[in-house]
Length: 172
Figure 1 (cartoon, helix red, strand yellow):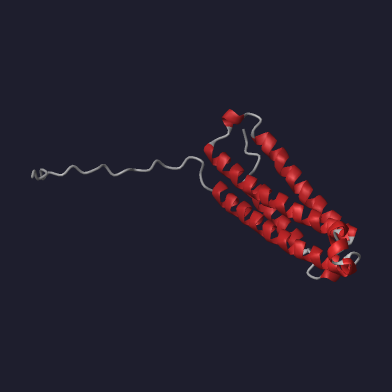
Figure 2: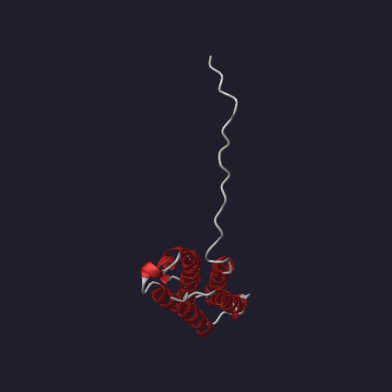
């Protein structure tokens, strides 16, 4: 069975995620609900793509070799980072759309309840946290792509035989 995750697929996914991170807003003024929704949707697309490829890989689990399992483990780590980034962006969306968590702020800081600038500032911080997680995901994908370049059948390791000493052990 051909590997569902090839070296080029891992590298391509890493490039797509890097391109997405490059478009993340750097300032609170750049944060918008439609862009947040698009970014969340794109991360969801990547996660669905990974899940579909995983399904293909494990359609016949007995035929998944050690090299492919190594690649799949790396892709799984990347997927975990992507999901974490998606949770941060979803949290940013909640902040931007609700203004701020009104239930919590009403009693402690009533003047901040409907402050959209503060909500956007929080959203851009969430973007930064998501970007860091996505950078870690691309590092996993890049390292997985490098692992995938190794031959699947490594030459056997030659083990040095333990030398037997010709000198007898001393007896006390």
